[in-house]
Image 1 (cartoon, rainbow, N blue to C red):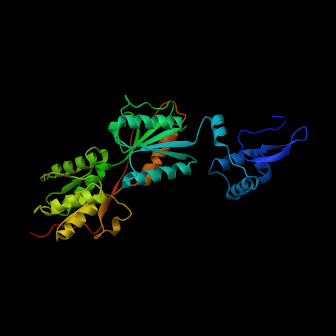
Image 2 (image 1 turned 180 degrees about the vertical axis):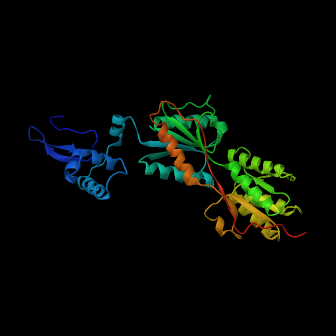
Image 3 (image 1 turned 90 degrees about the horizontal axis):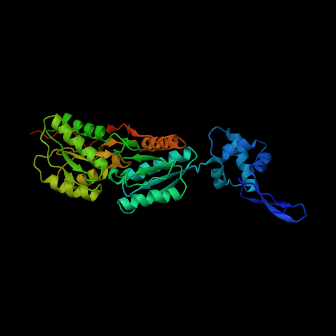
Length: 358
């Protein structure tokens, strides 16, 4: 290049003259930043990679030098050198459900805290072909590991082709025999919700279930039925919803016509909200005549009328553990397998009470 040099880890040009006296451009290097900031190149690298072990004053000094010189780290060059892209891929079906949105937010936040970017790839149609295509596309986009938020029946190891040497973590699944799985204790949370209502004196608990194909809904329904059977209670037929408040409302209209219904466990807070409205529209008081429990503990649950008793899910912890598992698999000799359960807890508010006398 006629005496003009270019460092791989640089991006912003500075003017200089070559051996013949011609003016050219040289990209700002990490060494240039180090000289300007009065620190080592290693310190510049640590700041550039978001490493937490840098004194704040030194970090600001380096960032100032980067800004003054117009330096931007070349992540592609770093990837070629280290074999790491510092990017996690995320595959999921929909952003319309509370659980998916909050889990995604927690994963992105935890990844950023570790100095990793995230690449999101929504799957529009829940089919094996779409899932296979998503894994292929993420492999082409150069990610170090993949976190999946979707139903287990679409993660058949015999049909899904995984990128080589890329670890996989699955949230909300029962695929622990094939992948690393991180999930909320769905069964434990639902059991605690039903037990709370029975302990208040209700003779049975009706259930508004989530979609039949949902792993979380399956676990919550199974726990509801099991706890009623354990207590020797009648098991009413579950009413099926789709996680939406409207489906909860339609289920609530049916429950309002059930003379013996004094307690309802809804599989999520949005459906519980629909149930509350349906009961109100039919002249039934909560919790005076019917108690209602939800699942998720969304931020607005305490602002329902009445404030909703619900099962709290720690989405931040789910996201953190997903990222931890993904990072452990990067560069590891083999993939992780097994399931990690994040505990739940019941948050008791004003929507539950003993059944009406008589």
